[in-house]
Amino acid sequence: MPRVALLFEYPTLLGGERSLLASVERLPQHQFLAFAPQAGPLADALREHGIECFPSPLFEENGERLPRPLAASRLIDAVQSCGADLLHGNSLAMGRLTGAVASGLSVPCTAHLRDIIGLSKTAIADLNGNARLLAVSDATRAFHVAQGLDQNRTVVVYNGVDLDRFRPGRRAPHIRRELGIPEDALAALTVGQIGLRKGWDVLAEAIGLLSEAWPALHVLLVGERYATKAETVEYERSVRAKFDKVLPGRAHFLGSRSDMPELMSAADLLVHPARQEPFGRVLLEAAASGLPIVATNVGGTPEMVEDGVSARLVPPGDATSFAQAIADLLSDADQRARLGHAARRTVEARFPAETAARALAKDWHSVLSEPRPSGSAGQLETA
Image (spheres, one colour):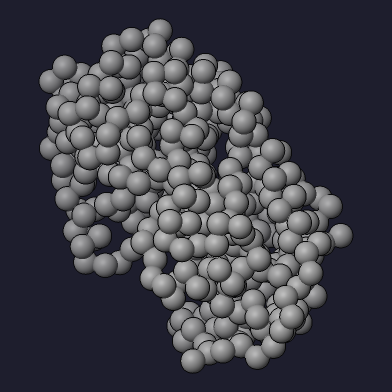
């Protein structure tokens, strides 16, 4: 039974963490342990899954981040002492670290690529130290291979979704009662971290264009701001002010929520105005729920849903097109139903969590069967 060590950077439980946990809980033939912050939603979820959680080698006990060479050295010691057969980084940043320490370990390293961002030559070299890189979409893989990632070790493993937890026909009237939304009012849902990439400023502008024609529309905004940079703090303040102006009393900022299936059942459509999206988990969950989707045509999104068939896809940053697509669905219940049904059929066929788990296990098993390069478990270069 392979023993896999999972490396996480932050204590939050967001799309990347949920996607990995959805797979590992379907792999009973593996043993898992995790290096992660010891408190927070992620640590709670790991324990709920029966995954032993070791202190993160990235931080001091007081939460101060360690210099990279010291963190790398501690990671090597932790992996060697825990008896793992494989080390997996669950993000691009953690993949840089696993790749950098790979030559100092006697076990192989793999990592997920969940971002589409420009990388330095040093970052590319770090990532290429992994035995396998798992991109969440073809778009993500192509972007990074074009930057210099080794195409032979970079593969696509799509995220999957729990088709029982997210399904059409659920009823959650308590959500609307909680928020004071009339049962006959239309409601749009958006989910994501509060930051420029998720495009909530574009959504606010689009809603403003719709406010006269749809004066009873409600918008549910689920997510938090985790970045503390001044520009991100100002971005959140500006977005909230815009929604308060265009949708007074009907913009519901809900923060982080654990009842996503119920929230989706309370909404009439999902709106996702992201400027970039490697392979959005919320889109998978909405599609599984049979919720009609308006999203931007970026990243891996068109690999999941097709414009006019299982979603409406519009150019990023285009508030007018976004508003028109939303208005089209608000005014056409039949179209909402048709798109929702088609999206559900798509995820049933291509993106069940079980399929994602099998693909992940297949790549891990392939890596474990490959001979280790000579010189592995040598001295890590920390300069």
